[in-house]
Image 1 (cartoon, rainbow, N blue to C red):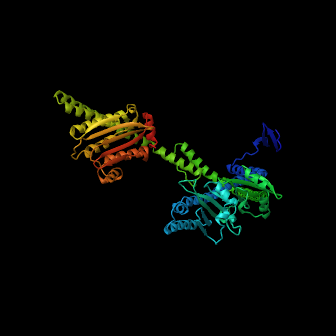
Image 2 (spheres, rainbow, N blue to C red; image 1 turned 90 degrees about the vertical axis):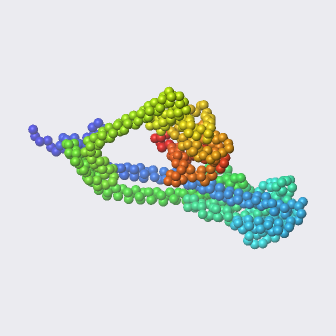
Image 3 (cartoon, helix red, strand yellow; image 1 turned 30 degrees about the horizontal axis):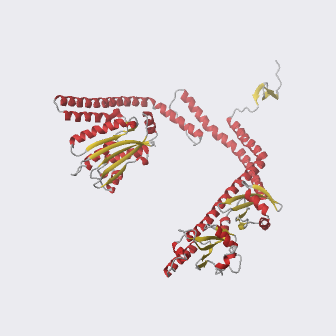
Length: 626
């Protein structure tokens, strides 16, 4: 057959683009080397997102920037409103403190005798300290119905109007109508003779007798420097250029930070514009003086003041243009960088993979002594490290299995021994019990029976928990044994709710506490009969156990030492052990509580949560209690 000419052409087959070379069909992007494939993938992985980013970056950046500006502006205005509200609240509180001052009340009370000089000095010192403590207070003026007048100025002296001239003024009527509450005024000029407008706002309050609010004592006026409010908004910047204004309840501009004087004039003259600003629940776009602004306001409660911010839309768009240019520049730099490092990355990735594949081939043939050099800490390096660990664990498998089986045999033997020893003990105690019964020694038989019950419940087949009923049976057996030893020391009493016996509790909680009471509470001679009372009850979602005695008691330091002193200190080890077990299992709120008084007895209280089943206990234990 004649040779077919060399042919190279493209063909589409089943949706795939194929290239045919010398009648051999090959995929278009088929690479025999992983390095070349990774190089192309890296380029495509960066190029496609960059093209998408270039198409939509402008719209998305504008949207996100505006949303971020709106959110930031809204939060900032809320913060400003809160800070100004705290300043106004502080000023109002100061006037309230002054109005309730007892020394000042005595000076203003028309029915009282003339105050001595020391009383006047005390009131003056009190007012002077308040004025010095708050830098924003510019003046303090107090008129008394009995003719008393107090004035104090932090900056410069001013002549105040007589009280009789003030009675018919609007500021007096408005303040008096508040009936003792604070009244804010935009200007302090009404109470000064020359009517000069100072850079301050004024708060007034009618002074009344705190015991008889119908008795009017006078009027209090205090000046608040507007610069104190201006200092709150001075450091605030939103989107680089923001105009911030603070309005009082009568739409007057109390303080402001602005870069456009025309904007300040428009806000002073346009009442409708201010109403529209105050009623906006969310930031809105407004046209003011031919310019677009993003406006946001926050109400300053309860004073009906408002804080308003106006951010030029042009500033927001200007920032967006900068963002877009930076994004495009970074995208170009990133594309060039990826193109340069793609070859190096692809080579660095394939080299350790080749070494790993070679070692795996040797491992597959049965050579388990393989160790691949780990040259990096990335996923491939971690894969090589895990592979080395797998090979090492495989070599040690036979030895580990042998040691594990040996240990298992030892554990089984030890378990068998622990099972034999309790049975031997129980059988011995049963023999002593029966022998005592046969010999007519009932008391010894009961003590042996209690001892057998005590050991059985204490061992509890190796479990560290049992029911409340078992705990009470264990403690009753222990008390019976101790009562046989010390028959005249105490009388036991029990008070256990009938519905809690099935709940689970930690083993051997009460025995150390009862032991401490028996050995120490009743060891001193006493004219009264000793009583040891054990109670258990349910409270809410927990169980409460209480051990109470009427013994000798102890001091607070000794009670504290029982819970906190180290074991090396000696004494009370059982109490500390119980407290540590409770706090480790259930947390510090469930620690022991000891209430004791010398000569009056001791009460020990412990609490545990409700545990209704063995499964709940195991889950609690596996999760380390709390």
